[in-house]
Length: 472
Ligand code: SF4
Image (cartoon, rainbow, N blue to C red):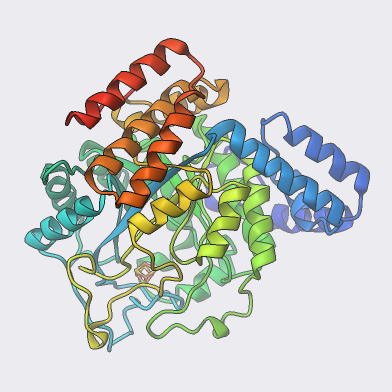
């Protein structure tokens, strides 16, 4: 039985409910009246149910699809303004005991070079990331209780937070590691992590089990219920995602929204972020082997409908996507992107030789951080290195209620501009700096409260004078 409040994976992600939803969406995909009414409902920024969103995803009436794209843009603008949060992944270890068929770190891959960073290497990688200007990381590691136990991850987090190189600092460490116990989630929370990210890969249980034939990740329920344990362990910012291309995208899209509804129903707070990765080529992984790989048009539609259906959730695209695809996704709802990512273990300090390739996937966007920042500025966005909400305790439902009342504009906008200013002073090229100063001057005027605007202006001039780390 479908029950969003159940703590059992197969009840809150219910196969029959997904199939019924897909039938309902198929039946109504030409129902102009219903679709138009759903678009109107979504305009209120209160989100849509998985059934309603599935109808929008299925709709193939061009004029209504254009309407959805327009609305996704409007919602994004209303909630996020022009701000785009920047981050980088940091790969700690590619040792892994699982058998995921789409990932080159799978245990049966005997030719991939296995690496695990020492604390000294973590230090060097962190400094390299700080020297680019990054303030927010997503830690990545394979699942291996011997090589990458929780103690190793915790030690790495401590090392990262302890390093202050020149004006650099990593101020928020998000963590993307395998499903674990409530006790371990508590330890991650105590170590000061931001978001706990775990991709479901696919919500289709049977396919999930085939795609994860061996290792602890084979256990569908344990993996699917991980966010509940993370919440029970005190982590109230969690990040969802499926790997589009593994299974029928429609099915996973509905499963993802049901997962968000479940978190909302049980914990009163939906996912902090949703990522939209697509299957990518990598070491022994050929995208051609995955017949469910999705086109650019479907990708854009998914991004737009997620934005409409879950308006307050941050949306992330990585360097899996090309510059053109990232541009389209930014217009339709994405609010966070990675920049200058290395998807290899130890790839920031030194480019690894071909024969030592440890990359989890091949990047489509290989630009430097300065190039990405300048590109965003030229597109009219504010690249933001802000980490204030989490450091001020605005997480979980506290963050969501601020976002829902729009009050976040008086925090996010000045924080984005102040952290951009830090970037411009400490790391930017002349051209980026020129563009950034122009954007700061324009965007300062958009801070709604006069008092906040004046304080932000003052702080920005103090940053020019050498002070750092102001926040609202
Ligand atoms: S996806 Fe994660 S768990 Fe699976 S093989 Fe890759 S690193 Fe291991």
